[in-house]
Length: 177
Ligand SMILES: [Zn+2]
Ligand SMILES: [Zn+2]
Picture 1 (spheres, rainbow, N blue to C red):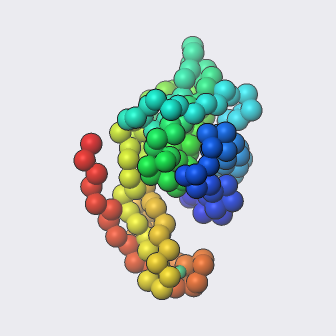
Picture 2 (cartoon, helix red, strand yellow):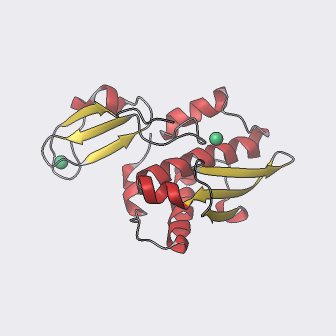
Picture 3 (cartoon, rainbow, N blue to C red):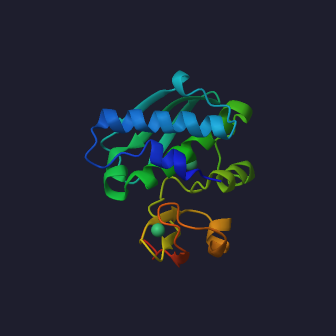
């Protein structure tokens, strides 16, 4: 399950510099890796922000099955916000973990299982928007969800953390890609 506390703890807005974006992404990555017991050594990886990539939200570069560097895309963050950038970080962490433990760079069954656990999108390259919005009826707070989760299935079992309001769920409109 994704942890909204972690999302909020490292949240930055799109006025952040590239350095701030990178720093927030790494801190968030470390916290998520710890929480989910992933075989990811954030400090041992090289991290960078791509200012050129337009269609890729992120990437993991690897050599001989070993993860070496993580690239996250500035334009993706600027256009889609921190929640989307954080989802990309979770996606890339799954690649790093599967490479480190199994030399696996695919989006196969092992990837899908972890994507479910971390609420990460499965397709990084063409990923754009969340599948669902969970919206507080009272204060209008919006939570992005990339997979069909318990919160999406049974919003009535949860309450807004900001105001205690009830949630409704909306399918996000399809993005053309
Ligand atoms: Zn991927
Ligand atoms: Zn609320």
